[in-house]
Image: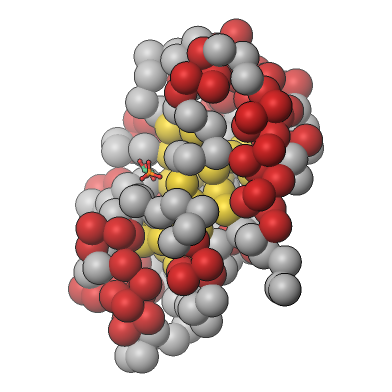
Length: 210
Ligand code: 3PG
């Protein structure tokens, strides 16, 4: 159950979403789904993130709901209790990875070096978040990892835009990318759900071959 390879195939882009006010949570999730993006990585970066997770889990069942920015075992437990269907961490420690492997949900551990990829692979996982993708080396770096380790699939995230996403998505070891650009904070605050739906439509189309 722990391997998240199937999670990476849901959408060409996994929106990395930070919600300050849980009253916006359901509207944000519906705006993304309306645009054809039915997956969310909701970051645990706000005090109310668990409440937002619960609301989306309860009211927007068409969304595959993940919790992101999981830094500690307790956060992983709390996110699963709140309804997270998968977990994403920006990096891994032995304690966090070991704990997440005991849970009943797929996990997407973050890696940024070949050694980290090998450490996660040793635990039987073949799907990983590559973070922070842009600063770490971009598409050329991800492609180079694929030479010795072609059987790992990545979701590069960090510093990716609609303009740079295709450069990652064309790589054989990239199934999707992640990014926060689909849900700008001011669009959420202003209730601009149409903008978010439009950005989701554009992101969903990245997966369609010309
Ligand atoms: C993440 O947690 O994955 C990143 O903060 C997303 O990076 P971005 O804001 O550059 O898309």
